[in-house]
Image (cartoon, rainbow, N blue to C red; front, side, top):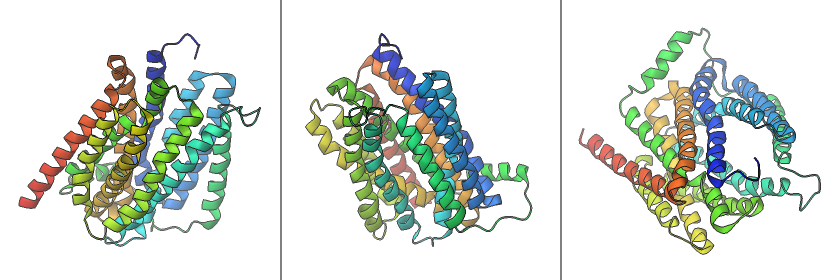
Length: 367
């Protein structure tokens, strides 16, 4: 963007750019989940990983030629193909017993934590000419294209299909089945809890880099290092806390205390005017949020039953995408009121979600 563009215009544009990825992800995830239930996990993963590789290469080209419209197009395509996250989780669920599901799904949090520990600092490194003269903002996207190619080769030759496909396919029935999931007892309420948690958390995790730039003047490398620091504790939460707690506390009860506590931590973060406070909040918030993230998946998977794993993970990821779409669109406008407003709204959503979850649990316990 031009140097004269205001912070408000930049915040709103970034919000729409992030949201463009999420809106197509929201649309595609339940459909890709249903496709994987029919065609098998492997075939769907191959199709979508190839599409993701193409979209990230297109992002790099958009940056090189300075085309914001092409960048938006590439992010729409990337969101479309990223709907395969639910398929990968369904594959893990295919191989897990009901008792081991939460523990095994926590491995996705572990992998995500490792990725976030490595990814943001590496992205900052690859985007900075300080280290290599020909690095620029397109370099991380070229690198991702190569990683997707490696992933495609690995899936083709090493991945073993985990789901028995159907002999006959009825598209109308698949769409009806997606609707039927919401009618499964207890499903609707906990899907709402999951969606509200995702939205509240994204108000924080998608906005804090912008906030730290405007509050402390951080550049992309410093933000990358801080994101890696946050992710270390997400990793630890997924690896140690989740896998240990799920043996002693069921997923539902774990969510009841972790959701509101996450909201309290985000509210506290908004009042810190020094980096020291953020360094304390980041670990605690990551530990709590990672617990909710895994517990929500395990709970929905158990409620859905074995025949609907692809669909339920597709819908869960679709809820995630909807939160990913709404939050960044709102943060740019909220920041016009006060730089801390997005964190206040995110905290309020999480605290309200905690109250809703506690009431839902109490109602179900009486039934």
